[in-house]
Amino acid sequence: MKTLKKLLALIGAFCLLSSPTFAAGEREIGVFVDGKQVEVCDGSADPLVRDDRVYLPARRMAEDTGYEIHFDNKTKEVTLTSEQRQIVTMSIGKKDYVVDGEKKTMDVVPFIEKGSTYVPMRYVAEAFHKSVEWDETNRIAMFGELGLAIDPEGEVIQLSSTIRLTIPEELSDLYVYKEGASGKALYEKKNDEARPGSGWLGRFEISDTPRDLATGYPTYIVRREGDQYLLFVGSHDSRRDFENDALEEAYREARERLPEILSTVLIEK
Image (cartoon, rainbow, N blue to C red):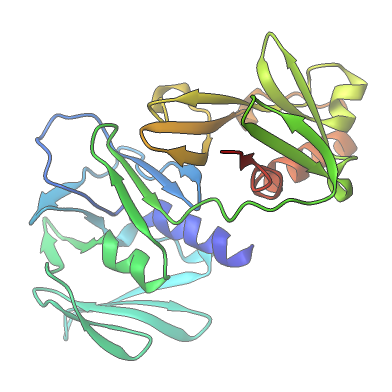
């Protein structure tokens, strides 16, 4: 879990992607890491397209994520380290780079523009052994997947005739599933019992587009079948009102453990 949190923070801090060429003025890129949508840009820096890659400044890396970015003015090298371990070193204007001590070669180069150091995201993602997929139609970059489907003991819920979800026994006190005006949704159980509907975590839906960034709601890509996405569209923290600290803590835990329950989704052929 710590590795995933660090990677999410890393992607968010870099806001760096790999994609086909796209024209200026097109809508922004959506980014999903291990199935979860992350906000990668806050408007403080615009991505630069060069050599069929999207770059953003490496300085966006925040030190409190557990990673550190160091730029050597003398050698013009950018180094990403974690817990005193060097992971990636890239050099301005050079295709050669180093991952865990192993020399590799990119097909593009890092560069400096207007005082900022830019790095191609694809090679950073690959250093973490994450798959990279690009949805050109929806302008979505996907790094890794939600995880392999598991089939635990627990409450089995049919989302459709071919899609089922299981609430594992060990999570039965944390989640409850309901269908209604808010769709096919998951709730945090204690909040919902205290005030029905207050523990809303998100709803399942099938769509040919995996996000609408304007909603401000985090979204999970649970599964992808061809051009269709099974999504879990989540709630936004700022819209939660809690009656006490215990209910707030329960809700936070339910949000953090969503990948565990979403990974139980199975699509029956």
